[in-house]
Amino acid sequence: MNDDDLSRAPASLEPAQEVLRQPAFAFFWSATTIRALGGAIAGVAFQVLIVTTVNATPVQISILNALSVAPYLVLGFIVGALMDRWRRQRTLVLTTLARAVTLAVVPVLLLTGALNFWSLAAVILVLGVLTLFSDSAAQPLLPRIVPRGSLVMANAWLGQSGTVAQTAGPALGGVLLNLIGATLLFVFEAAVNVVAAVLQARIKVEESKPEPRSPGRHVGHDIAEGMQYTYRHRTLRPLALSVHVWFLGNSVVTTVFAVYALRELALPSLAFGVALAAGGSEGSSAR
Image 1 (spheres, rainbow, N blue to C red):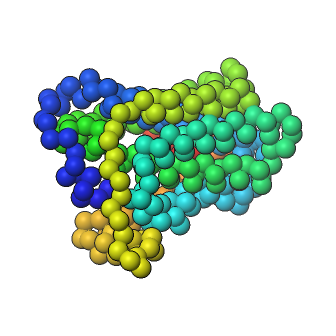
Image 2 (tube, rainbow, N blue to C red):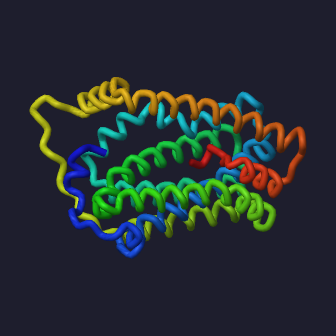
Image 3 (cartoon, rainbow, N blue to C red):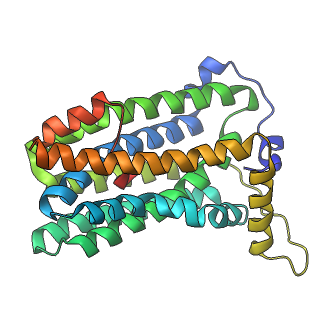
């Protein structure tokens, strides 16, 4: 998000508690919430598939978990620079639809017996890239959707729903795996993303055209400036580094816990999902 996004935000100051009465934010919040819940549910399903169906080794499990977050570390600044040049709402809708298509591939792989380490790795990597684009489009879009005075409350609503999704999602994922199986669960996940895309498409927001670039200036300059600004900023630098460390630690814990719970303890998917929910964790493969 750049300074222009904040300066062009609506100037009216509506009461913060009325934020959900603003149609654009209501659609944005609803789409974000159901997608977050769906992602948490799919996270459990992916972990169960990796450990029990694919029978991946611990090294393979760590690779699959790393693939879901690798796009953030490798492509984060590139995608951020591109978002300053692209229509963010269109990007949000298209990436959500692409997520639906990618998730729909999993039932096909299961039914045809083609689900293996390599096919699952491709699915997880594609989902990671699409989620990065989606997150990068959503963040700078919010200040254009709600008045500046409602931004704090809007972020609070998004944070609360995200916390609920990460807590309830794994348990619900374990229940659904037991009730309908992995194939139908991923069909359900694809449908959830289609619904989210429809809600996102209904958001009415004005996006100004990107400012023309100076002659000879390309996206590489924006990426370099973004990296310099982030890692030289006294506040953003420790925040960025802490996020990197968190991703590393979370990947280690997710790998070890999944192997121990599903293989050593032989927990059923329901108990595994409940355990993740109790720990406030979620499978990282479907972020």
